[in-house]
Image 1 (cartoon, protein in one colour):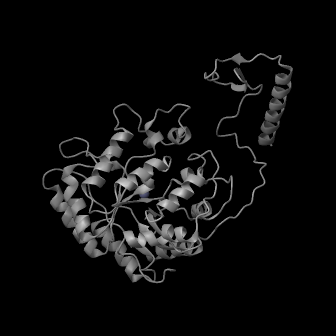
Image 2 (cartoon, rainbow, N blue to C red):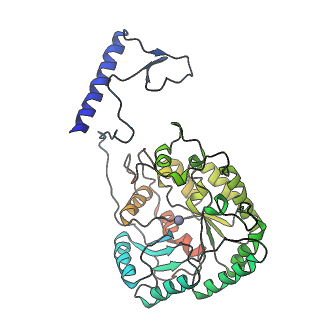
Image 3 (cartoon, rainbow, N blue to C red):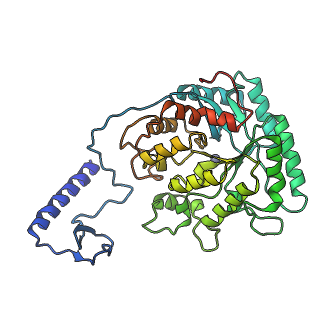
Amino acid sequence: MRYTRTATALLISIGLGIAIGAQGRRGGTAVKPGEECPPGTTETRPGSCQAPEFPPPSILDYRPRTTLVAAEHKVPRAKFPVIDIHGHPPGISTPEGLASMVADMDRLNLRVMTSASNTSGARLTQQLAVINASPYKDRFRVLTGIDFRDVGPGWAEKAVAQLEADIKAGAVGVGEISKSLGLQIRKRDGSRLRVDDPDLDPVWQAAARLDIPVFIHTAEPQEFFSPLDYKNERWLELALFPDRRNYQPEQVKFEQLMTERNNLFKKHPKTRFIAAHFGWHANDLQRAAAMLDAYPNVVVEAGAILYDLGRQPRAAHDFFLKYQDRILFGKDSWQPEEFPYYWRVFETRDEYFDYYRDYHAFWKLYGMDLPDEVLKKLYYKNSLKAVKGMPTTGWPQ
Ligand SMILES: [Zn+2]
């Protein structure tokens, strides 16, 4: 009821604005060309700003009903079987957990869930034992983690030995290397552990030798490194989650992390890297293209950046066609009800529909209408190429 009243009040205020504007009597605040309206006002005529007559709702409470009548094609189930290369499945340590996940996965047409939760040693062996003893051993794969604590002389030998043991035990790759590499982790000597630190080189070389991919998440969305002002398009997210604020002067800069990451890719051309979250370049597809062009050993994963693809469906469509062999599907957090948003953006031509988290994106999404061959590559073919240990049979041609 309150909501309806707010909407009515707003309509009245808009109506009043038009009426008064037409009469040209009510004076607004004048601004020069190129100047912004003062806070609390909006430009109603060129050079003239006006405050609404009623107190404006906050960004949390303004939830206008759309009057657009658009075709709706919800996609509860992906058109082709899917490998999720970026999973953090909660239930893979017990047979019951696996069974309950598989029920959801079947509904979504998610054939393989990859656990990218940095699992190593005894925990990894335990999870693999549960998976292999279950009826679902071809439905799950596990990546191993690298322990970046205490990097210094002697660290690499131990890390490589653990990596070799974990791969022998059945892990199919490394990941996810967390954003804390670069952002927070310190070396034994107290300095920040850079993404391209030479002490880590033996690990990346071992990955090449073992023919396994390295799934790496570097930095955060670019706006997390920008001041929390009203120009920041992630204002709400940053205001909600203190640990996502990376804009303090003493913190490492976004561009610094990108440079270190690119150095890493360049230094190890024989190592296959999967850059999580599109390398945080889904908001700048030219930059994503430049990265893929510069480093043939790199592919990208499309998790948690759907809000950027869905707001530029034509550019994203063209990008996915051009780089159709270089993009892997991943979702990140395990929320079964969120996957259909991905299917809908990738598969349909639908327009102006909601994303699943308002704090990520206050804008609407549009479908990219990808052709079947590109969908197949995105959903499973590219992951089969990147990760040798995936189940190889039973996929559509
Ligand atoms: Zn993740």
